[in-house]
Image (cartoon, rainbow, N blue to C red; front, side, top):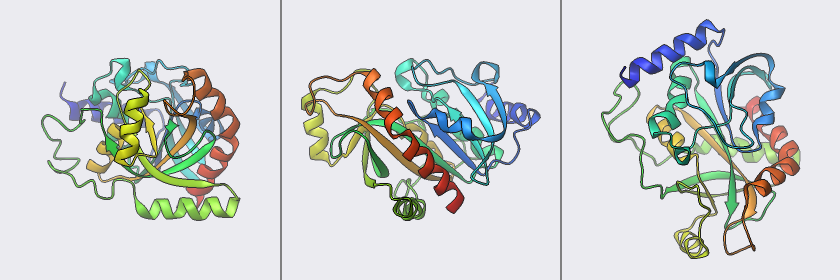
Length: 269
């Protein structure tokens, strides 16, 4: 089955489940999926039950799709994303974004846990731009003309107007929201100290193993994007060791600010 047919099949399946006309898609990263539990009137679908859908195998990712009302908006939330390092082709990693587009989403809020280069643990960072050092691009291959052009412009992949709303909202709530450039790598190894020094020279504020493929596809599909990184640890060379347990632990400390901020941003968009 070709990709466009798979997307249509999955969208039809979800519509039959009662997932109708979401306004915003939410992609919730490591330790951040708890926000989906606050969705009212939820329709919950396990990833394993969705045709053509991927599987999330990472600790801190619930592996459920949740649709319903959040902050007065209809949202479709991914409790756990798919990563390239799990062995997923980028077609699978980015598949939910295209389904969101077909279902009617106008924008996507993409979140992740990231290592800090310019910022320390516990920081929330609005993503202003990214550097793709994965060596991959999800648009390689035949272009899906129904979604977007062969050569999409990435100048405003992270929508400036959304970012402005995020900063205004954070200020009203008294939440510190920084802004910076996210650098994407494939993982699953954490970076070496030498790599982090190189990334710092390139202008990166944070580094992680997700987000970039989804945002490329979102930009191709004409979706507006707000990206928020939860800085959960210093990147390699800034602290003695790195481990995933710390990532999940730090997100537990900042999750209330994170959840409150995302809900208020949704209400304001």
